[in-house]
Image 1 (cartoon, rainbow, N blue to C red):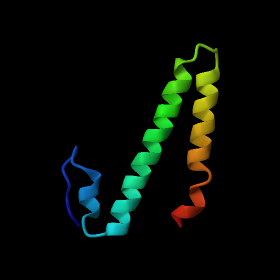
Image 2 (spheres, rainbow, N blue to C red):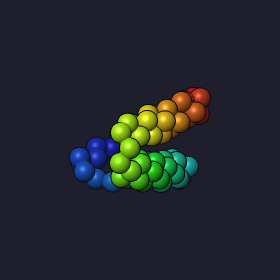
Image 3 (tube, rainbow, N blue to C red):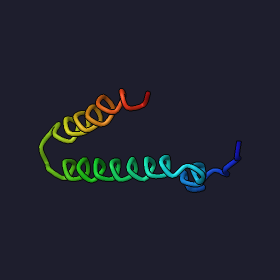
Image 4 (cartoon, rainbow, N blue to C red):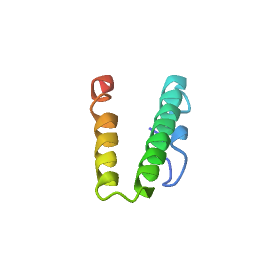
Length: 70
């Protein structure tokens, strides 16, 4: 098993597995999109809206992807 120093790119861990590299990239894109949506919701000055959007984004991110982990 390879030892990767802290702060190095996660893709180095999957350098021999192209499917895993693709999955890492896709997850990164998904998280970036969710972060942009959460930031946009936080910019709207409605009390509680940012919390509700964060909760909805996290539940949609975690719950549907759970069966795909197996």
